Image (cartoon, rainbow, N blue to C red; front, side, top):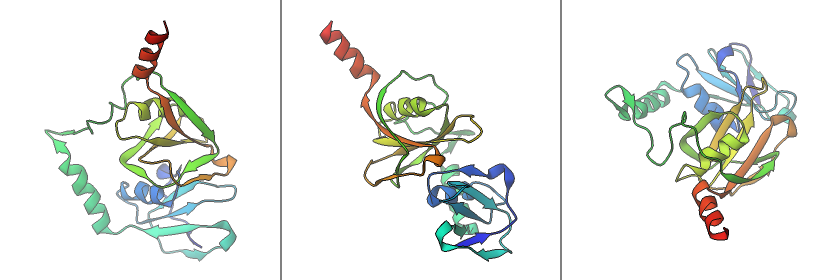
Amino acid sequence: DVNYYGGTIEDGVRRVANMESCCGVCTIIPDCKGFTFVPEGEQVGRCYPKAGLGNKVATDPSLGYVSGTISDAQREQVIAEVEAKMSGGAVKRDSSRPDPNARLPRATCKFEEDMDYSSHDLPNGSLKRMDKQDCCDYCAASEDCKGFTYVNEQNGEGGWCFLKSSTVGKRKADPRMGFTSGYVTGKPQEQRQAAAVSA
């Protein structure tokens, strides 16, 4: 129930699934010292990374504001993990997942509107996608993905796809947040095989 008022890093403001994701946003922004996550109300799902934490304001508990800080040790740990994946100036991609820029074959998914598969985020499993179907296709092409939550950007320019290791822990989301969760029911190869059998 605390808001770090002011000091917002405007370029880093985005809508995310939960406070853990908001913490992650702050961690990768060099000047970010902390964050405020708004889970309810008109700004539902908004993550505000902060360059300064001087103006700490108590908020109405009904708003559900969650704020936190990022230590230099935490940021150094994340940087070390990224550097550990560096080889010859290029980041090694998880072999269980496709290139994010690749054009993927269409998969079939069961979509659940206004639903959040809370927690169970896969490591390095958050990425921008064009729409929920694009998120579905990426999950289908990722060996370790069991489900996903897609969050529309309010500016209409795509959204964020959060890959999940499990669909356990689903919960209803405020319709204003633009959440759609789902899981793969048919991968392209399986669909081709089924079509060949029925032909």
